[in-house]
Length: 462
Ligand SMILES: Cc1cc2nc3c(=O)[nH]c(=O)nc-3n(C[C@H](O)[C@H](O)[C@H](O)COP(=O)(O)OP(=O)(O)OC[C@H]3O[C@@H](n4cnc5c(N)ncnc54)[C@H](O)[C@@H]3O)c2cc1C
Image (cartoon, rainbow, N blue to C red; front, side):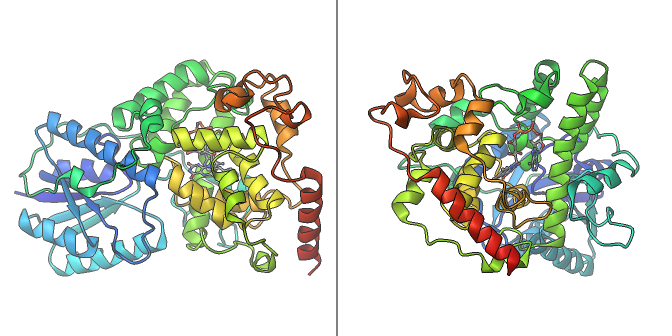
């Protein structure tokens, strides 16, 4: 009897899981997840992501149990652990869905070779991106560096495939599994995850409900509402997509099927956001050190300032004295998520007003976001810095006051996240009236903006 080990990674779902589907079609299945915190080059998860992973694995284990299956948990170097699991359960095949980071691809290629040598059938599948990064290239075969032509080229390709269902039947033997609690993915002493628990419900069922809710309630008006941090105007699918609890194919198809009711413009903008996700991943595929190296090497000469720890903490914990930045950073600290417009403003403030290297902010987001994504996070930080592909122009410095007046005119978002400002008259510029208990501005917006502009101009002329 054929028996396939399905090695899950960033694809913690049963539906639209091509590796699982193909394995179930050939015979018995063992589903396994490996916590690999030791293999070289694999970026260790941040705290919020570890919290998410724990709950996502719990949800997946429960879904498998309903079908009479066990989720097999192992830790250690995947290179050794996966073959061991395959040998223990006397499998004849190992399947997985593709990953796109260099260290991950290198690991997968080595495993494919060694398992193949050992007589196993090994297959990998496209599951987590709508378009394989190597398939979308310019006429001369090079990767796209600008989003719009990249996305146009994607849209000119055959439409993404229809998603697969949950395999009709799943069965297979049980082999030894580690205890999830022993992995200590959840924070303890202190337990800082109360806000995450209040806000999120990880797992495939919750991801599906969130998508349904978004398409029924929120997609109408998305193009405008997505800019307003005080509105639930976006899908909040990002952590579910990050951990593969839902696939982009499922989102794509359901959103497309909804086109009868939603305005075409809203759908186009939403699908374009999924396109940005594809774009970030193709950037990472072609520049694997996206989280550590400037995409534009001329930025290597940028005069970043050595951050003062107290000032950095003021940014991290929402005490800069600029309400939009503080509201965003407190939302992030409490819920593990921040609205996109505020992410851009908070990033711009750190990089351009405080002149701190974008990598410092990227690492903080990596630790604190539940959707911390190996491609989206560095690509967006580099976009804000101006050092990335198709990046914001160097002279674009978000003014936190103008931004909050424009996108949170009545101050609802600011008041929600900054209790000190709840009864302030001028919530956008509290320093004008002096609100007790709320910090004075960390810096002079105009002087810091001029300083950044001059540094960016020097860089251009160099
Ligand atoms: C400095 C900075 C850091 C960021 N870090 C991350 C990160 O680690 N992980 C992450 O998923 N997104 C990141 N983003 C992009 C964006 O802020 C989030 O994807 C979005 O806020 C998630 O909310 P949502 O699911 O409601 O988005 P929606 O508006 O509903 O969009 C749907 C999906 O499209 C994708 N998407 C949307 N915007 C972008 C974008 N700019 N780039 C890439 N994909 C996008 C996401 O997968 C998102 O879930 C970052 C943006 C900035 C400015």
